[in-house]
Image 1 (cartoon, helix red, strand yellow):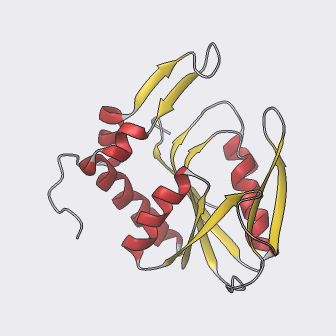
Image 2 (image 1 turned 60 degrees about the horizontal axis):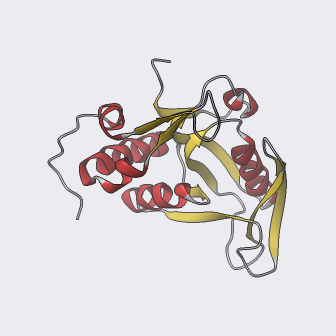
Image 3 (image 1 turned 45 degrees about the vertical axis):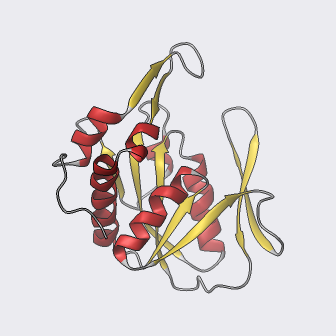
Length: 185
């Protein structure tokens, strides 16, 4: 049963209080924003999930797509709150065949995401993709392509944080994007 009393009135308040900011990680000049303390605090997690679920409901999703790995944590809780299913979008090699695979470029290499080819019906499903951070947008674009190849439609994106200046927002196209900690956007 979800908690009803919460010390945070908003996800932004919880994130401001609990996100661990680590300068110069993983490289000099980068400010790493670690969500681990948010996930470990019941009130902070509740505030984040409540707002992610509300945004996902407004986008009209009837299925949540959670991206490996933190998107699984967030997406599962959002799906539970909404009373819908969760599609775990896995990194390559984690699922038994047959799978649908979508390769994409990272900053340093090529990677791939996968979903099962059978055992579920995505045709006509309205999917909201949930993840922790939007940076370059590569994983969300790859996940979108996977969903579309399986017959579903991505109706929007809900993320906790966005890294400015990496072009991720622009790569997502016309589907709505909700960022909980929007930095005043």
